[in-house]
Length: 70
Image 1 (cartoon, rainbow, N blue to C red):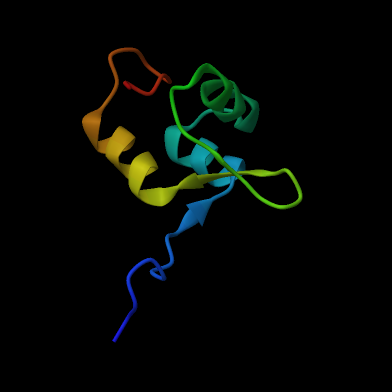
Image 2 (image 1 turned 90 degrees about the horizontal axis):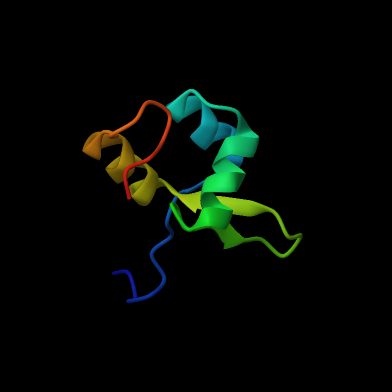
């Protein structure tokens, strides 16, 4: 039986997010800096993105090509 708070969430790298949106990984980093998508920092300082949030942005569509609608 899982204990609350121990469920692991799937995290994606900037390259994985970029391939889903068909943009450059640097674009994903710019979206994170602009607050359009939330990023988690690893101990090494790398960005990771929650899969659930990324998939929600993809399913919501976008008002402009290549830009997540947030």
